[in-house]
Amino acid sequence: MRKFRTIAMVGAMSIAGLGLIGAGAHAIFTTSTVSSQNITSGTLSVVLNGPAGSGGQGTTSLTLPAVGPTPSSFTTGDQVITITNNGDIPASEITEAIGTTYPASDLATQLSVCEVSSGTVIYNGLLSGAQYTQSIAGTIDPTFTDSYIVNIYAGSETTACGAVYTVGAPAVLGTSTAPDLNNLAEGETITVSVTLGYQG
Image (cartoon, rainbow, N blue to C red; front, side, top):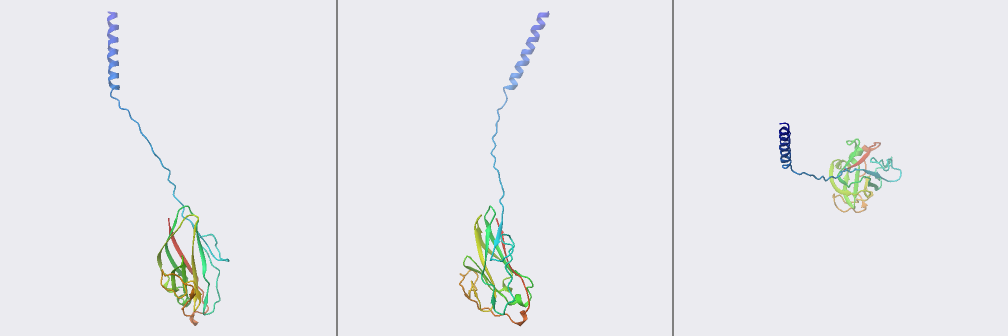
């Protein structure tokens, strides 16, 4: 009897073993792959440099030397402003606006402004007509520069725009045809600014 029991137990274990092998026979092999890529966003950074004596050289806010007291016919001269792309992505110039403090003052309404970039007239005429934002196009690659000229004037003065008043036309150095300041503008002070907008 004892021997029969041993045989029976061995038989039961054999059957259990067969059951395990049967379950393993239905397994499926799996594997996977991974591809990865680092993404680093760039930095948009432009700075300005201007004529000697300008404040804020190498920053985003340049202050040109003050002019005046002026006579009724004068020019600030063609001031060259250099834009440097200090970032690591291209900087696209998208907007430009000329503004002033005290826009309703007699001085602000009588002054004229000439702005030139890449040999093209961006604006030439009364300051009061320039105080709006316009679209511009230009791209500065990293480490490269661009520049523009700005001249605030009144009367018959020599500017980079001369007598060319059509936006987008080639600039021709020459004498302006703007009127002189009149008595109402005497003793007034304003600040004129040119603002460029960029995207990258």
